[in-house]
Image 1: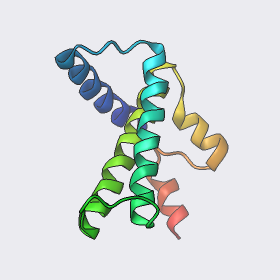
Image 2: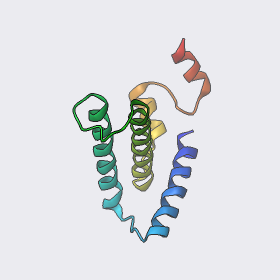
Image 3: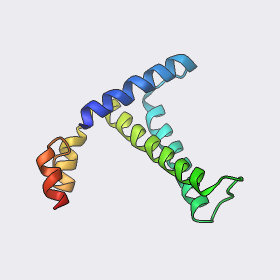
Image 4: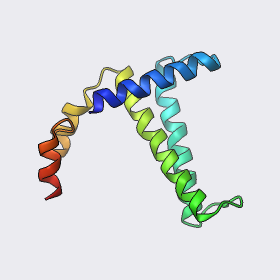
Length: 110
């Protein structure tokens, strides 16, 4: 699952970079992840009343939070891909389940 998802983010990121003249050098992957974390923090602060809402409704703020979380997920996967990290193995080591095994996911839910 993670490998397939990572490939999809990689394809989308590569196409976006090519269309916008962005060089995705090794530093870009970490810097972009940090940028997206900042945007996620900003969205969280707005929802929690610690930032200006900028006229956004509760629904829009909730959507912003989901969108920024998706960006962080994507950039984590891009960073891992760029650096040859095996996230599935790391999840298994650290979280004690395999993200690619549906049976593990089912047993965790029980």
